[in-house]
Length: 169
Image (cartoon, rainbow, N blue to C red):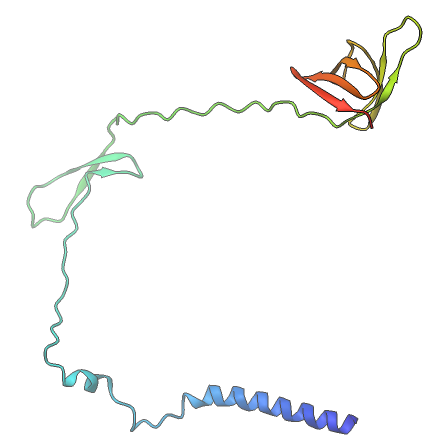
């Protein structure tokens, strides 16, 4: 079993190396006589006109990167362009800077566990705000949370001006 596995693996490795060598050497062994020279391909086509595309570059009067205006020193077209950089105040409108956005307070994680009422005292809600257990009486504010009212089923609170109803957990 081990001997046949080694023979099969040897054959596979030889096939892979043979393929790699064939691809590497195969492109270099082309018969140079059978290849058509590049000039001979176009020899029969005499209708081919090759013309040079020419253009001229004109100097810019305004440099957008340096924000400067260039004046041409000489108007003679035969003389190369020479410029003197003159800084001139440009009437570029100023872009208003956006005001930073003030982040609104994020509603904390609130769990309502019920309330306690004893005799003539008002209700006290048993609340967990951001993992911190608190007892908050009706109308009291702790951790930015104000209790408006509570009963067996839910708790009514206000946080940053928003009224929220939280069911009992």
